[in-house]
Length: 342
Ligand SMILES: Nc1ncnc2c1ncn2[C@@H]1O[C@H](COP(=O)(O)OP(=O)(O)OP(=O)(O)O)[C@@H](O)[C@H]1O
Image (cartoon, rainbow, N blue to C red):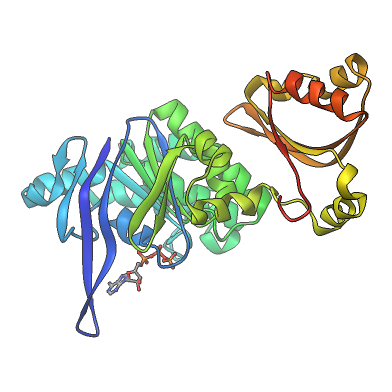
């Protein structure tokens, strides 16, 4: 468990205070995958580095499993740090060492007997799917394989917490997916708490239970993936959501709506939860004297829950269209679409 308690980190920049992290306050629960998302300079790297004391807070506290690391004597701090693994965007592997030695490194450093080290390394390489690469060097591996070595190295000392610093930002989309799957397996099989920072919304959508959105050092919004995607409050969060969910109706369709003039009956139907699985609109076409013309839409899945919207034109008498709206409002949310609004 990681608790940020009104944490700030202030740097000096040209004689002025620069609040890289500013009053951050949230808790990452045990076994959770928590994402911190923000644009460049938002303060994400500084925040994650406060967890393992690569940075010290200027104000507030960071508690790791209930302990304030700044208060620990050095030998205790070393012990606690072993319980916090970290992986990096550019993997940070030792190029002159084999995969086996890279993973063994943190164990050898702490004086673990060789036999024990070899056993643990073999076990972890099998877990990350790289048993056959033990004798190879980093330069012989793909980016995804290098990150698997990074994950194996971070897991070698059996941590409770894994910090991921833009861990998939240097990888292509397919490799990103496979690394995110591996991180899920790390959480599911070892119960490790994962805190990840990223600027990519598709990454947090794929694996995180909850996220916090950072801007100018502050957390501007936080919540479950479902809540933030389905109802983002802050404009920055809305921008992030837009990077993965096309909410805006394309201009060509809006122009078409404008051309239809006053007689249009165009609505945005938002599906949340099990309503997305119900054939609401096909039922309408059968039950009422209207035709349903789908103009645009997107349905996706968030944390196993279907979510999305369709923009539809209802063709029929106004009275009948109103009856349809009343009917479908019981299961989905309905908004009228005008040509100048998505
Ligand atoms: N050691 C430092 N000294 C002075 N300023 C710093 C230091 N580290 C970070 N900063 C500043 O703090 C702010 C937050 O930086 P940080 O690297 O934490 O952001 P970020 O969200 O991780 O962005 P990026 O993804 O670009 O690294 C930036 O304005 C940065 O210039």
